[in-house]
Length: 77
Image (cartoon, rainbow, N blue to C red; front, side, top):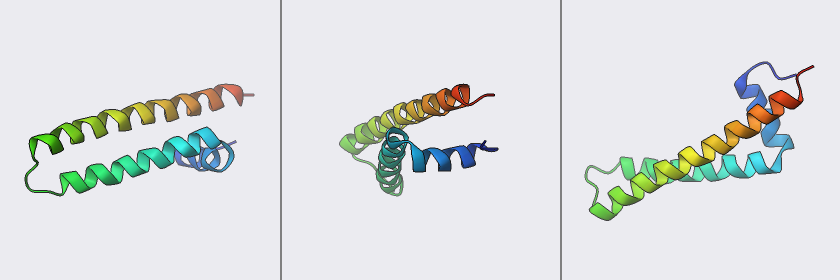
C-alpha cells in the first residue's frame, strides 16, 4: 500500500481516470492563476477571474481529496 500522500497521488494518477482528469484540470487552472498573479496590476475583470480560478481549484482539490479518502477507506486491511 502507498505510504505517503505523494505516493498515493502518483498511484491514483496512474490507475484512476477521474483522479487524473481532476489533477490535470487543477494543474491547468494553477498555471492560469500563476500567470495572473505574475502581473503587477490586475484589471477588475482579471480580479474576478482570479477569484473564480481559486474557487474552481479548491473545488477540484476537494474532489481529489474525496477520491483519496475513498481509496484509503476501500484499501484498509
